Amino acid sequence: MQKLFDEVNSLDKRCYEKFLLSEDLLMEHAASSMALYISENHSSYKSILIICGSGNNGADGITLARLLHTKFDVKLYLFSDAKSEMAKLQLQRAHALGVNVVDELSNADVIVDCIFGTGLNKPLNQNCENLINTLNSYESIKIACDIPSGINSLGQVESVALEADVTITMGALKTSLFTDVAKDYVGKIVVADLGIQRNLYELDSNKYLLDESDMNLPFRNKKNSHKGSFGHLNVVAGCKKGAGIIAAKAAFGFGAGLVSVVCHENLDLPYHIMQTHFISENCTAIAIGMGLGKYETQEIRRLLNKDVAKIIDADLFYDELICEVLNQEVVLTPHPKEFVSLLKLCAIADIDVSELQNNRFLYVQMFSKKYPKVVLLLKGANVIISQNEKLFVNSFGSAVLSKGGSGDVLSGLVGSLLAQGYKALDAAITASLAHAIASRNYKKNNYSLIPSHLVEEIRKL
Ligand SMILES: NC(=O)C1=CN([C@@H]2O[C@H](COP(=O)(O)OP(=O)(O)OC[C@H]3O[C@@H](n4cnc5c(N)ncnc54)[C@H](OP(=O)(O)O)[C@@H]3O)[C@@H](O)[C@H]2O)[C@@H](O)CC1
Ligand SMILES: [K+]
Image (cartoon, rainbow, N blue to C red; front, side):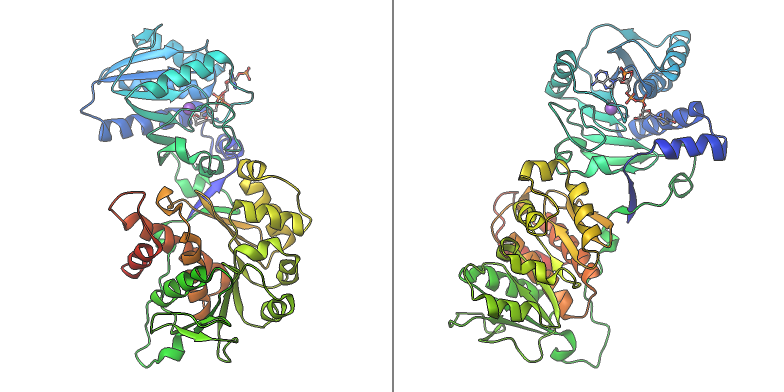
């Protein structure tokens, strides 16, 4: 996993003070990293348009123009007068070397957006919006320097933002690049080397971006085993029984030794999934909430208080009963609307979904602070998983998963790992990664996936 930072100004400052690496030196490396990326990945392209703002993001762009102007047809467009000391200095250097500064926008093979970086501090005016809209309309390869212009330090987009194919971000990964909103703008994210090893540049963080290597699949190492060695998951089915059945099928395919659906009515289940009317004696984990609908409170309370690992989803996030388990190490998997209800039930915040989506990290952090034992998995374009105020982001998901039933598969995967003895946090991380990575392996198209395809891809991981 890689660290995420809410801000990097303090990291830059530490470089000046502790390592005697000046701003000029860091910027030279920032621009060299962008130049290297362009030379290695876009060498066949001829023309490059670099659009610069008044601060140091613009200064990065002016430096890049100086580094590339003898290799490509570089046009430097200054959207506003250089204001920062570095932008002024870089412009003097660029002028001295004869960089081509243009006063009109024109299309190019590659566009580099150096309008605003981490210093965006107010709403965009009409001129800025028009500029970004024009750039978005070009069919060029678009590279954002540090962060696509228009995304603020909280990862929010107030009006417009540059739709980048690639974001080359300076020194370390920023949290703002991993909000749900940012996902449609950032493209591929590359970290630029600032001339200092990343592990020396970075300090501690409580936020992490998950990598594929953080997925710890339930491979079986023991030769002397039987089905009971891999746990028994009980999936509680409610009014919408399909949800429980989907979860049960996913759980079985993800390694649980035994899976039973708990339901008072008789169900038509595949032969390898069992049915029980009450929780099994030897059950090692319970999955509950999906498709639950109406239920008998005392019966659910009994299940929630059973001393066994639990994954809780869906309908239970609308019931005060949920508050009774928040001192346990349970896994909760709400989508944004459910999380909004949960936040209200546990008196953390009374907000709507758009407020949550604009500040996902903030509300997850608040919840995790109040309930440190709970593993929260907030669904979204970028899933956030938290426990004890540590946050982990899974950015592998895509629109392929935006379907009824995908969440039930995820509940089944988490339940399966809990039943097999994974700790709650490890179960949530591996299940979430497996869910998203498997969905990427479904190659047919990005609209037709159904839960059984997803389970099939998960079984092939
Ligand atoms: N520090 C380092 O060592 C390194 C820094 N690096 C680079 O520096 C970047 C940060 O630079 P930065 O702090 O100068 O901010 P930046 O994003 O250029 O914007 C500030 C300018 O924009 C203006 N402005 C803001 N909002 C506006 C709006 N809505 N509409 C109009 N104008 C607006 C604002 O104007 P003002 O507030 O003065 O009115 C100010 O002039 C960072 O992202 C990275 O690329 C790398 O080289 C690595 C080494
Ligand atoms: K930018």
